[in-house]
Length: 71
Image (cartoon, rainbow, N blue to C red; front, side, top):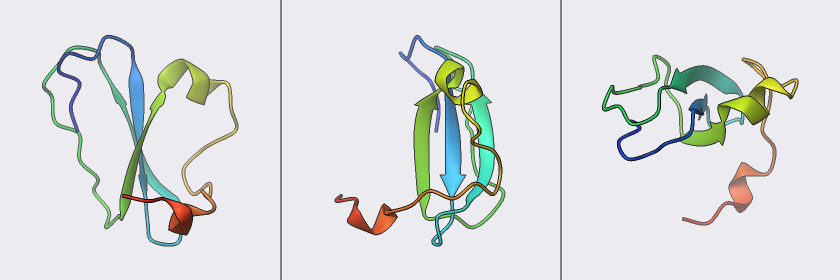
């Protein structure tokens, strides 16, 4: 994941096959710095950093209904 041509701060959540957030990386706008998970994950979800800070979402929080996501 990187932020080339993206102008708002985003955080990528790395989520395993059971829906648990195994990693979180804040990304700086308009950069090409790669952001990778250090754990085995099935999903990467980008969310607005400001919004994420206003929630109780943390490492090992669980995301439900991932099986309903269509690709």
